[in-house]
Image (cartoon, rainbow, N blue to C red; front, top):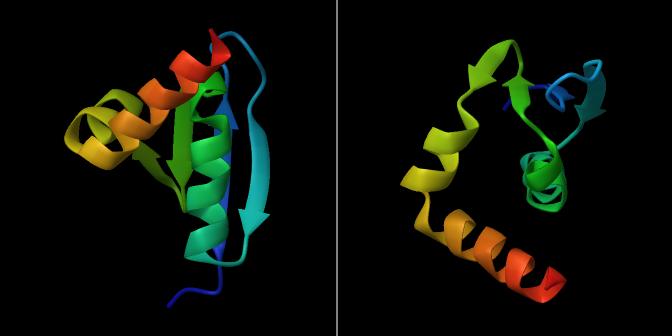
Amino acid sequence: MNEGFNLIYAKSGGSPKNIFLDTRRDTIEFLFENLNNIDFISINDVIIDKNKLINENKILARYLKLIKLNEI
């Protein structure tokens, strides 16, 4: 396992932010909590396609739909 995860994220038109997370669990929790507010994601210098991540992961897609329903 790596020493940690360097996550770079940004909202469209916003300045990129950088956060270092120690574990996979912390990284996944951060993404779950903030994915609706993020347009660009890079983990350890690998760019993640947000749409592909959501569309190919049924559990994540369902979770995000539930969050949207709760916000209404």
